[in-house]
Amino acid sequence: MKKLIVAASCALAMIAGTAQAQDRNLRVAFDIPYEPFEYRDENGELTGFEVELATAMCEELSANCEFVIQAWDGMIPGLLARKFDIIMSSMSITPERAERVLFSEPYYITPGGWFGPESFNTDVTDMDAMKGKNVGVQRGTTMDTYVTENMGGVVSIKRYTTAEDMVLDLEGQRLDAVFVDYPVGEQTILNRDGYKEVGESVKLGEGVGVAMRKRDADLAEDINAALKKLKEDGTYDAIMEKYFSYDIKI
Amino acid sequence: MPDFIAEWLNENDIFTTMTLMEYWGGMVTTVQLVFLSLVIGLVIAVPLAILRTVRNPFVSGPIWLYTYLFRGTPLLIQLYIIYYGVAQIPGIHETFWWAIFREPFYPALLAFTLNTAAYTTEILRGAIIATPNGEIEAAKAYGMNWLLRMRRIILPNAARRAVQAYSNEVIFMLHASAIASVVTIIDLTGAARNIYSRFYAPFEAFIFVALLYMVLTFMLVFAFRKLENHLLRHQRPANS
Image 1 (cartoon, rainbow over the protein chains, first blue to last red):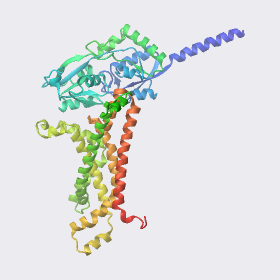
Image 2 (image 1 turned 45 degrees about the vertical axis):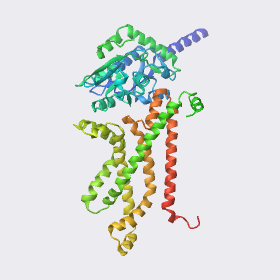
Image 3 (image 1 turned 90 degrees about the horizontal axis):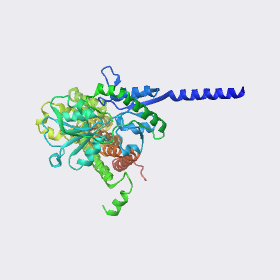
Image 4 (image 1 turned 60 degrees about the vertical axis):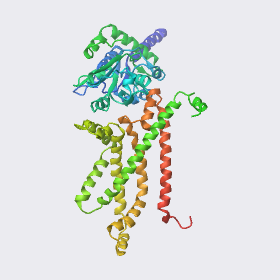
């Protein structure tokens, strides 16, 4: 009898244990607006490719997810300070970042695109012609790193915190061209009159992953499994087709 | 720079000669921006403060409105409006103004100057209206006209009363200049943000820049103490 009770309570404890593991709370951080990845629709609801993917992923993980808005500059510090648990805000995987945070497998990759006004007819790969041009990038992005490393002494690099500020300066003719995440440029620049793509887009880096704290290795495993499942069962493709006319799957 | 110093510096990851030069460039920009806006602001503020004390509301009214607007709104908003606003003015891109306002430095200088001029005007005005009646009456008794009274009696004493409050304004302005980095100026804060985003090392990048601001502040405090000692030497006890 005694053995039975012990066995039963062990079983109960195990069930309770797994139930608790499934009842996971996750705070997911986004930097908005970053169309079409995360932004507020006309009703003020948070939406976008990454928001929907995060929602699907949370369902797959059976986790209670809470969405947190965090400005880009404070993303990694906020994660390390436990203000939230994961970042799904188009954070490209880089070796420098990987020293501070743990990345999941990449869940999308987009190229960097060159955009500028109709009047811009310079070859962006021609360093002599680009000399002294004002080029806008978002600070700390892979596009920033690319321009800094490849065109550092040639062009005058203007770094912006948000894509909106950068587009405003492009409109205000302070910038000759911008080098920005392709979908962002497509959404915020190409849909205006008088702007075009001014150069070949460049695939940069290893793609975008979910960032978490280094110690959360278990979570990373679960997230990788969940993302893999979403990519295979068609959920990922359905979300992607809602927002993109081209493939960003990796 | 001697090679051995460069070598020693380049041994660590973050504070290499390259990043230190970036901080130095930022420091130069910050000092230029703050110094120019303070000097121009002060030059504007002195006549405005005098006119602000005039009884005629058509003279003092507009100045009151100006100081109210610039003290009543955040400097960041003023900077945004001026920086993005001028670029939206139709036709400005064809005028010579655009050569000036295209660079972020000048819109920022304009915003900072107008802001500090508004605060300084009010500081000076307070000091001017605090002039004891007896001093003015004595000056009148000597037959001094308004201009001479202003120049010899009221303004010098007002400057003595204003210098402590003004030293605060100067230090605030130095710290407020940190927002210049939002309009792509690479000032001290801009340099720190670039270095932070390159190395993902917020503490190193920002604590170092905080120390640089503290050094600048210390120099300002020191200079103002010298100035106060000079201006207020008549108030010192006799034997000190």
